Image 1: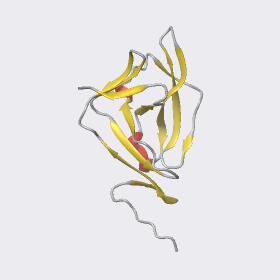
Image 2 (image 1 turned 45 degrees about the horizontal axis):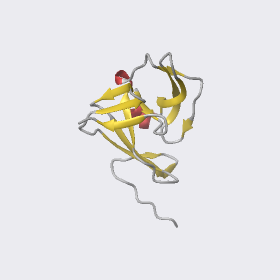
Image 3 (image 1 turned 180 degrees about the vertical axis):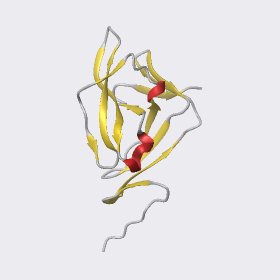
Image 4 (image 1 turned 45 degrees about the vertical axis):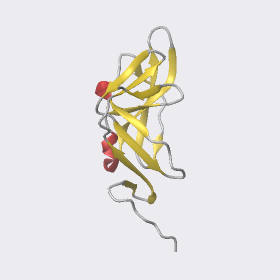
Length: 133
């Protein structure tokens, strides 16, 4: 029989407890940029660490209220995560450049993962996220 150790205060997937996430709220201000264009800035980010088939790099989620929704439009792309729920993706368009799927939001997060509702994360290959000093 396989032994499973649950991490306290983590959010576990109900049907697969080895798939879980922990979150925290760093006490620092962060900025997300495409080139020199700021697309989000906040002192209220959520840091998410997930363990599933891999131990994934932590991801910072910005409150949607702190994102430049004038530059980010909801796209037709969506995806599903069995731990978090269903996403909407955001495309970037500033009138000069257009980049597909720069970020995502769990707009239909599961009840047990609703901490992610109203937050947006960004693809680190397309968007630089850094702490402000």
